[in-house]
Length: 209
Length: 209
Image (cartoon, rainbow over all chains, first blue to last red; front, side, top):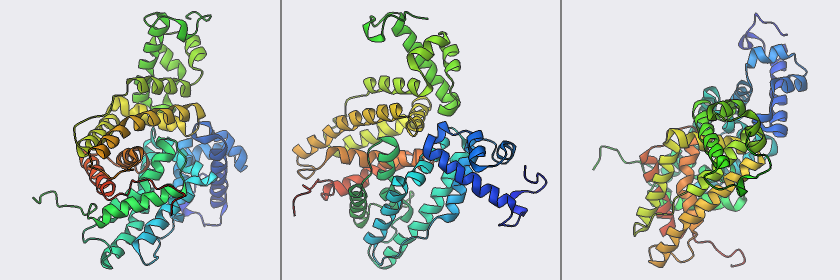
């Protein structure tokens, strides 16, 4: 066991607590790739990380706790939005980033495990909500830039346009369980962009006539 | 235990095997609403259904087996597509049908459980794929009718348009974990329709220039 009297936040980044966390996060991702969320066990993760079971149970509590912490970790590593100079390029960069993540064995398994955990665990659901809120907010910046450049109508909702590009890819991944290809990414961008140029992402004031 | 020498398919519909299945399917949905997929146990379902544990283990094997059979049952109850006379009405009917299902406590919990199960169980993934293949194929018929009426361009892909209307709703439900409202359904239809009228759902021959 590591020091029970210290919380993770008070220990220096390179210290034992940080090393234990890194090993456990790594072991959690390995286990998710191999067994998925339903097959993951705390004991398995402890053994793989070379960390005592007690430590894992005490610090993460449950497998939902493990994948939630992993999601929080991924949120801090999330990349800033693209800035290719035009909205088609930026939306394509968003679609490719989603495509790469979901088709990456390790990252894809992590997202699917998190989506599974969130269906029945409120802590996991909150971590997922926060992750995408942050990611969508970041990429919405590309739409604001496009509006400033005059590429899209004033009032175009950036978050909604980013959601529209990403949604069909996740839908195929976790709902219809179909392959998600480069063509799907290109189609999603093309369709969302046609609608956006026509003003379909301008949010109307609900009180307006 | 019911008769081990008879398979479900050889027993008359109103017989004991059918009654056991109905009770077990009902208990499975109850358990999903209360505990989600990760909290569901075979023993719980057996007790709730008033059926021996041995029967449940033997016929369904695992909780993934239970939700898979439930999904197959729901597939047979799936409704034919709307025919309101215009494509906007039909796409809205599709969006409302999705909205109702995911916001219905019982049905919504079932879909979320199924999506969770499919992330780590191939049998569940296949049941989900078959369910949506059938549902999307059915509703694609509304698009074919619209093309015949001249409302949408020749070659518009019905399955793709139906996916585009449904995807943003499921994305909010299971990925970003945001509320899914009537406004979301209306926006999804409006955006997909603008793109469809502009020809963004016409599938090009990959060999064409």
